[in-house]
Amino acid sequence: MVDDILRTPGAVRDAERWTAHNYHPLPVVISSAEGAWLTDVDGKRYLDCLAGYSALNFGHRHPQLIAAAHAQLDRLTLTSRAFIHDQFADFCRELAELCGKDLVLPMNTGAEAVETGIKVARKWGYQVKGVPAGQANIVVAEGNFHGRTTTIVSFSTDEDARADFGPYTPGFTVVPYGDLDALTAAIDENTVAVLLEPIQGEQGVVVPPEGYLPGVRQVCTDRNVLFIADEIQSGLGRTGATFACDHEGVVPDMYLLGKALGGGIVPVSAVAANSDVLGVLKPGQHGSTFGGNPLACAVAIEVVRLLATGEFQRRSSELGERLRAGLEGLVGKGLVAVRVRGLWAGLDIDPTLMSGREACERLAARGVLAKDTHGSTIRLAPPLVISEEEIDLAVAQLAEVLAG
Ligand SMILES: Cc1ncc(COP(=O)(O)O)c(C=O)c1O
Image (cartoon, rainbow, N blue to C red; front, side, top):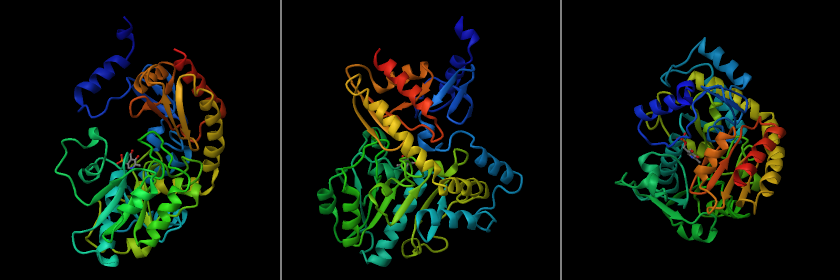
């Protein structure tokens, strides 16, 4: 029987048996990868069109990143922040320069960067803006995805993410995404920050109307409110620019970064802001044992250097146009809408044809890995090292899946 020969079915069963079912992965079991390609335990190859939700912007095992990790593993892996190590200053300086900000605060996961941003904004509100104690408010958007902590899910509008995890953290006002009037109306004298994804990734690569982000920037400046851009998924080359905010010439007060910052090797996240904002934190008020560890910094320094060349932003922009052309050709042929920014695409499949899950399963059978998000939407986020031919291959396989 096939099951006796193939290792995948047993490996899928084992994984299901021994883990909490907080994910519903596609039934593929990967054992190695290089560049834009993955190989499973049975030797089948897949084109990676998810890239670890953008954590693998530079592809799997980019030689420069792997070399940095190896070299660092041989020297020093962890000190905690009780001491300073020799990779720390370079990482913070180079990332601060990439962001055009004074200071960087390193953490590990994206959710921790978001939590850090929230804490810093509240402290700034009390100490700098003069908000009365305990009254700080942050405006967020419907359809947001900022992570999984209890505070962050408190202002999620996705019931799957939120239900039964209360009691919820107060201090957040939710407004429709892309509606500047609603956002402006929600700001009051106790508002310390507006926290937004410049493009909502998890929601299906939802791009706000042109002029929205500059409008948010202006109202934040006018009302003495911090603009926090969660660029954890949209940033670091994904959209054809270093930051998604760059497309509209917008500079937020705080960048939240993660995912690709760790080069697909280690979790690295960071908050970048000027000293009038990040300077509110004093020793003992915030921290993380692993945040800014030597291995993380050594890898992330090389990530920043890769981005400083501009090559990945250019690839994403140019190849994104090819991806856009291919996907737009499928509108009316199984797709009802596509949204593309760089090498990042949200595709709405005609729900009468199949669900996003079904489409991803059929794509996987054809050697292309992608992941559905809500209902009939698929997100494509291939590594930025993908080639033109590989983009054409992904689009051709999708066309076959949609044609049934
Ligand atoms: C925009 C955004 N913010 C925050 C997060 C949370 O990051 P992590 O899963 O590393 O905690 C994600 C993860 O998908 C994200 O897309």
